[in-house]
Image (cartoon, rainbow, N blue to C red; front, side, top):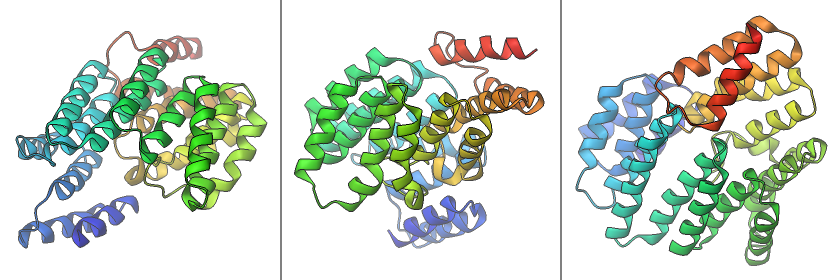
Length: 310
Protein backbone atom coordinates (compact mmCIF):
# COMPACT_ATOMS: atom_id res chain seq x y z
CA UNK A 1 0.00 0.00 0.00
CA UNK A 2 2.97 2.34 0.57
CA UNK A 3 3.72 2.73 -3.14
CA UNK A 4 0.01 3.15 -3.92
CA UNK A 5 -0.38 5.89 -1.32
CA UNK A 6 2.80 7.59 -2.51
CA UNK A 7 1.66 7.47 -6.13
CA UNK A 8 -1.79 8.74 -5.21
CA UNK A 9 -0.24 11.66 -3.32
CA UNK A 10 1.88 12.54 -6.33
CA UNK A 11 -1.24 12.44 -8.50
CA UNK A 12 -2.99 14.86 -6.16
CA UNK A 13 0.00 17.19 -6.51
CA UNK A 14 -0.15 16.90 -10.33
CA UNK A 15 3.32 15.27 -10.27
CA UNK A 16 2.46 12.65 -12.86
CA UNK A 17 6.00 11.45 -13.63
CA UNK A 18 6.66 10.85 -9.92
CA UNK A 19 3.34 8.99 -9.63
CA UNK A 20 4.31 6.74 -12.52
CA UNK A 21 7.67 6.01 -10.90
CA UNK A 22 5.95 4.97 -7.66
CA UNK A 23 3.48 2.72 -9.46
CA UNK A 24 6.28 1.20 -11.57
CA UNK A 25 8.26 0.40 -8.43
CA UNK A 26 5.24 -1.40 -6.97
CA UNK A 27 4.87 -3.50 -10.10
CA UNK A 28 8.61 -4.24 -10.19
CA UNK A 29 8.37 -5.55 -6.63
CA UNK A 30 5.30 -7.63 -7.57
CA UNK A 31 3.08 -5.66 -5.17
CA UNK A 32 0.11 -5.81 -7.52
CA UNK A 33 -3.41 -5.02 -6.33
CA UNK A 34 -6.69 -3.51 -7.38
CA UNK A 35 -5.81 -0.27 -5.61
CA UNK A 36 -2.54 -0.06 -7.54
CA UNK A 37 -4.37 -0.68 -10.81
CA UNK A 38 -6.85 2.08 -9.95
CA UNK A 39 -3.89 4.41 -9.42
CA UNK A 40 -2.39 3.43 -12.76
CA UNK A 41 -5.82 3.97 -14.31
CA UNK A 42 -6.08 7.46 -12.80
CA UNK A 43 -2.64 8.34 -14.13
CA UNK A 44 -3.62 7.07 -17.58
CA UNK A 45 -6.83 9.13 -17.48
CA UNK A 46 -4.91 12.29 -16.63
CA UNK A 47 -2.54 11.59 -19.53
CA UNK A 48 -5.34 10.74 -21.96
CA UNK A 49 -4.09 7.17 -22.42
CA UNK A 50 -7.29 5.26 -23.20
CA UNK A 51 -5.46 2.03 -24.07
CA UNK A 52 -3.76 1.94 -20.66
CA UNK A 53 -7.08 2.56 -18.96
CA UNK A 54 -8.66 -0.35 -20.84
CA UNK A 55 -5.76 -2.60 -19.83
CA UNK A 56 -6.39 -1.93 -16.14
CA UNK A 57 -10.10 -2.73 -16.42
CA UNK A 58 -9.25 -5.91 -18.32
CA UNK A 59 -6.72 -6.88 -15.60
CA UNK A 60 -9.49 -6.73 -12.98
CA UNK A 61 -11.93 -8.96 -14.86
CA UNK A 62 -12.88 -11.99 -12.80
CA UNK A 63 -10.89 -10.92 -9.74
CA UNK A 64 -13.31 -10.51 -6.79
CA UNK A 65 -12.45 -7.45 -4.75
CA UNK A 66 -10.56 -5.87 -7.65
CA UNK A 67 -12.97 -6.16 -10.56
CA UNK A 68 -15.63 -3.93 -9.00
CA UNK A 69 -13.15 -1.13 -8.20
CA UNK A 70 -12.08 -0.84 -11.81
CA UNK A 71 -15.60 -1.20 -13.19
CA UNK A 72 -16.77 1.68 -10.98
CA UNK A 73 -13.75 3.74 -11.98
CA UNK A 74 -14.59 3.17 -15.65
CA UNK A 75 -18.17 4.20 -14.94
CA UNK A 76 -16.91 7.57 -13.73
CA UNK A 77 -14.92 8.02 -16.93
CA UNK A 78 -17.96 7.29 -19.07
CA UNK A 79 -19.99 9.85 -17.12
CA UNK A 80 -17.13 12.39 -17.35
CA UNK A 81 -17.62 12.35 -21.13
CA UNK A 82 -21.41 12.37 -20.94
CA UNK A 83 -21.79 8.74 -21.98
CA UNK A 84 -24.32 8.15 -19.28
CA UNK A 85 -25.88 4.94 -20.57
CA UNK A 86 -22.45 3.31 -20.55
CA UNK A 87 -21.72 4.79 -17.13
CA UNK A 88 -24.88 3.27 -15.70
CA UNK A 89 -23.99 -0.13 -17.16
CA UNK A 90 -20.49 -0.09 -15.65
CA UNK A 91 -21.92 0.99 -12.29
CA UNK A 92 -24.49 -1.80 -12.38
CA UNK A 93 -21.74 -4.32 -13.13
CA UNK A 94 -19.59 -2.90 -10.31
CA UNK A 95 -22.45 -3.21 -7.83
CA UNK A 96 -23.26 -6.76 -8.97
CA UNK A 97 -19.60 -7.76 -8.73
CA UNK A 98 -19.32 -6.39 -5.18
CA UNK A 99 -22.50 -8.19 -4.12
CA UNK A 100 -21.14 -11.46 -5.55
CA UNK A 101 -17.96 -10.87 -3.53
CA UNK A 102 -20.17 -10.54 -0.42
CA UNK A 103 -19.26 -6.89 0.11
CA UNK A 104 -22.54 -5.04 0.44
CA UNK A 105 -20.87 -1.94 1.84
CA UNK A 106 -18.67 -1.65 -1.24
CA UNK A 107 -21.66 -2.30 -3.49
CA UNK A 108 -23.61 0.44 -1.74
CA UNK A 109 -20.72 2.88 -2.17
CA UNK A 110 -20.71 2.30 -5.93
CA UNK A 111 -24.49 2.60 -6.06
CA UNK A 112 -24.52 5.93 -4.23
CA UNK A 113 -21.60 7.21 -6.32
CA UNK A 114 -23.69 6.61 -9.43
CA UNK A 115 -26.62 8.37 -7.78
CA UNK A 116 -24.46 11.39 -7.02
CA UNK A 117 -23.48 11.62 -10.69
CA UNK A 118 -27.13 11.51 -11.72
CA UNK A 119 -27.85 14.40 -9.36
CA UNK A 120 -25.05 16.51 -10.84
CA UNK A 121 -26.38 15.85 -14.33
CA UNK A 122 -29.92 16.92 -13.48
CA UNK A 123 -31.53 13.48 -13.24
CA UNK A 124 -33.14 13.97 -9.83
CA UNK A 125 -35.55 11.03 -9.92
CA UNK A 126 -32.82 8.53 -10.87
CA UNK A 127 -30.53 10.01 -8.22
CA UNK A 128 -33.14 9.50 -5.51
CA UNK A 129 -33.79 5.94 -6.67
CA UNK A 130 -30.06 5.26 -6.49
CA UNK A 131 -29.87 6.64 -2.96
CA UNK A 132 -32.72 4.39 -1.86
CA UNK A 133 -31.04 1.36 -3.42
CA UNK A 134 -27.70 2.16 -1.78
CA UNK A 135 -29.20 2.65 1.67
CA UNK A 136 -31.11 -0.61 1.28
CA UNK A 137 -27.85 -2.42 0.52
CA UNK A 138 -25.83 -0.99 3.41
CA UNK A 139 -26.89 2.10 5.42
CA UNK A 140 -23.43 2.79 6.83
CA UNK A 141 -21.83 6.13 7.68
CA UNK A 142 -19.97 6.72 4.42
CA UNK A 143 -22.96 5.75 2.30
CA UNK A 144 -25.19 8.07 4.32
CA UNK A 145 -22.79 10.97 3.81
CA UNK A 146 -22.91 10.70 0.02
CA UNK A 147 -26.63 9.89 0.12
CA UNK A 148 -27.34 13.08 2.08
CA UNK A 149 -25.27 15.16 -0.34
CA UNK A 150 -27.00 13.56 -3.31
CA UNK A 151 -30.46 14.21 -1.89
CA UNK A 152 -29.46 17.81 -1.19
CA UNK A 153 -28.30 18.21 -4.78
CA UNK A 154 -31.68 16.98 -6.02
CA UNK A 155 -33.49 19.52 -3.84
CA UNK A 156 -34.80 16.93 -1.37
CA UNK A 157 -33.81 19.03 1.65
CA UNK A 158 -36.02 17.25 4.18
CA UNK A 159 -34.55 13.79 3.57
CA UNK A 160 -31.04 15.22 3.37
CA UNK A 161 -31.56 16.96 6.72
CA UNK A 162 -32.85 13.73 8.24
CA UNK A 163 -29.66 11.91 7.26
CA UNK A 164 -27.56 14.82 8.55
CA UNK A 165 -29.36 14.48 11.88
CA UNK A 166 -28.60 10.76 12.03
CA UNK A 167 -24.93 11.37 11.26
CA UNK A 168 -24.64 14.09 13.90
CA UNK A 169 -26.29 11.86 16.51
CA UNK A 170 -24.29 8.73 15.74
CA UNK A 171 -20.86 10.33 15.16
CA UNK A 172 -20.75 13.46 17.37
CA UNK A 173 -16.96 13.49 17.67
CA UNK A 174 -16.03 12.82 14.05
CA UNK A 175 -13.85 15.77 13.01
CA UNK A 176 -14.16 15.31 9.25
CA UNK A 177 -17.93 15.12 9.55
CA UNK A 178 -18.08 18.35 11.54
CA UNK A 179 -15.57 20.36 9.53
CA UNK A 180 -15.93 19.03 5.99
CA UNK A 181 -18.73 16.64 5.11
CA UNK A 182 -21.68 18.13 7.01
CA UNK A 183 -20.87 21.76 6.08
CA UNK A 184 -20.71 20.70 2.43
CA UNK A 185 -24.05 18.92 2.69
CA UNK A 186 -25.65 21.84 4.53
CA UNK A 187 -24.32 24.23 1.88
CA UNK A 188 -25.83 22.06 -0.84
CA UNK A 189 -29.17 22.15 1.00
CA UNK A 190 -29.04 25.96 1.23
CA UNK A 191 -28.04 26.22 -2.43
CA UNK A 192 -31.02 24.08 -3.43
CA UNK A 193 -33.24 26.50 -1.49
CA UNK A 194 -31.78 29.49 -3.34
CA UNK A 195 -29.95 30.74 -0.26
CA UNK A 196 -26.52 31.50 -1.71
CA UNK A 197 -25.25 33.60 1.19
CA UNK A 198 -25.86 30.87 3.78
CA UNK A 199 -24.32 28.25 1.49
CA UNK A 200 -21.15 30.34 1.28
CA UNK A 201 -21.09 30.78 5.06
CA UNK A 202 -21.57 27.04 5.61
CA UNK A 203 -18.60 26.29 3.36
CA UNK A 204 -16.21 28.52 5.31
CA UNK A 205 -15.43 25.63 7.65
CA UNK A 206 -14.26 23.44 4.75
CA UNK A 207 -11.71 25.88 3.30
CA UNK A 208 -8.63 24.47 5.10
CA UNK A 209 -9.55 20.91 4.12
CA UNK A 210 -11.10 21.11 0.67
CA UNK A 211 -8.04 19.67 -1.09
CA UNK A 212 -8.55 16.51 0.99
CA UNK A 213 -11.50 14.39 2.02
CA UNK A 214 -12.08 10.71 1.38
CA UNK A 215 -15.85 10.27 1.17
CA UNK A 216 -16.71 13.54 -0.55
CA UNK A 217 -13.61 14.62 -2.39
CA UNK A 218 -12.98 15.95 -5.90
CA UNK A 219 -12.79 19.54 -4.52
CA UNK A 220 -16.54 19.37 -4.01
CA UNK A 221 -16.74 22.30 -1.57
CA UNK A 222 -15.12 24.60 -4.13
CA UNK A 223 -17.54 23.39 -6.81
CA UNK A 224 -20.59 24.06 -4.63
CA UNK A 225 -19.13 27.39 -3.50
CA UNK A 226 -18.67 28.38 -7.13
CA UNK A 227 -22.29 27.56 -7.87
CA UNK A 228 -23.36 29.58 -4.83
CA UNK A 229 -21.43 32.59 -6.16
CA UNK A 230 -23.15 32.13 -9.52
CA UNK A 231 -26.49 32.17 -7.73
CA UNK A 232 -25.36 35.38 -6.01
CA UNK A 233 -24.48 36.87 -9.43
CA UNK A 234 -20.79 37.12 -8.58
CA UNK A 235 -19.20 35.68 -11.70
CA UNK A 236 -15.65 36.67 -10.81
CA UNK A 237 -15.71 34.91 -7.44
CA UNK A 238 -17.40 31.88 -9.02
CA UNK A 239 -14.71 31.61 -11.69
CA UNK A 240 -12.00 31.63 -9.00
CA UNK A 241 -13.65 28.68 -7.23
CA UNK A 242 -14.14 26.67 -10.41
CA UNK A 243 -10.53 27.33 -11.41
CA UNK A 244 -9.46 25.34 -8.35
CA UNK A 245 -10.81 22.17 -9.95
CA UNK A 246 -8.94 22.90 -13.18
CA UNK A 247 -5.73 23.58 -11.26
CA UNK A 248 -5.98 20.31 -9.31
CA UNK A 249 -6.93 17.71 -11.91
CA UNK A 250 -5.04 15.08 -9.94
CA UNK A 251 -7.59 15.45 -7.13
CA UNK A 252 -10.72 15.62 -9.29
CA UNK A 253 -9.47 13.01 -11.82
CA UNK A 254 -12.44 11.51 -13.68
CA UNK A 255 -15.43 12.47 -11.54
CA UNK A 256 -18.11 14.18 -13.58
CA UNK A 257 -17.57 17.58 -11.96
CA UNK A 258 -14.18 17.60 -13.68
CA UNK A 259 -15.88 18.06 -17.04
CA UNK A 260 -18.89 20.00 -15.78
CA UNK A 261 -16.57 22.62 -14.31
CA UNK A 262 -15.72 23.82 -17.83
CA UNK A 263 -19.41 24.62 -18.31
CA UNK A 264 -19.60 26.27 -14.90
CA UNK A 265 -16.56 28.45 -15.52
CA UNK A 266 -18.05 29.41 -18.88
CA UNK A 267 -21.18 30.53 -17.05
CA UNK A 268 -19.06 32.44 -14.54
CA UNK A 269 -17.12 34.34 -17.19
CA UNK A 270 -20.32 35.09 -19.10
CA UNK A 271 -21.75 36.58 -15.93
CA UNK A 272 -18.53 38.57 -15.40
CA UNK A 273 -18.76 39.94 -18.95
CA UNK A 274 -15.72 38.13 -20.37
CA UNK A 275 -17.27 36.67 -23.51
CA UNK A 276 -14.03 35.23 -24.91
CA UNK A 277 -13.29 33.19 -21.78
CA UNK A 278 -16.95 32.24 -21.50
CA UNK A 279 -16.96 30.83 -25.03
CA UNK A 280 -13.74 28.94 -24.29
CA UNK A 281 -15.32 27.30 -21.25
CA UNK A 282 -18.47 26.27 -23.08
CA UNK A 283 -16.47 25.06 -26.06
CA UNK A 284 -14.20 22.91 -23.89
CA UNK A 285 -17.22 21.32 -22.21
CA UNK A 286 -19.02 20.64 -25.48
CA UNK A 287 -15.83 19.19 -26.97
CA UNK A 288 -15.43 16.81 -24.03
CA UNK A 289 -19.08 15.85 -24.46
CA UNK A 290 -19.02 15.50 -28.24
CA UNK A 291 -20.07 11.83 -27.96
CA UNK A 292 -22.42 12.34 -25.02
CA UNK A 293 -25.94 10.95 -24.76
CA UNK A 294 -28.23 13.60 -26.21
CA UNK A 295 -30.98 13.55 -23.57
CA UNK A 296 -28.93 14.72 -20.55
CA UNK A 297 -30.60 17.83 -19.06
CA UNK A 298 -27.40 19.76 -18.38
CA UNK A 299 -26.16 19.20 -21.95
CA UNK A 300 -29.36 20.68 -23.35
CA UNK A 301 -28.92 23.71 -21.07
CA UNK A 302 -25.29 24.14 -22.10
CA UNK A 303 -26.07 24.10 -25.82
CA UNK A 304 -28.85 26.65 -25.41
CA UNK A 305 -26.64 28.95 -23.33
CA UNK A 306 -23.71 28.63 -25.75
CA UNK A 307 -25.93 29.52 -28.69
CA UNK A 308 -26.84 32.81 -26.99
CA UNK A 309 -23.14 33.72 -26.75
CA UNK A 310 -22.61 33.51 -30.51
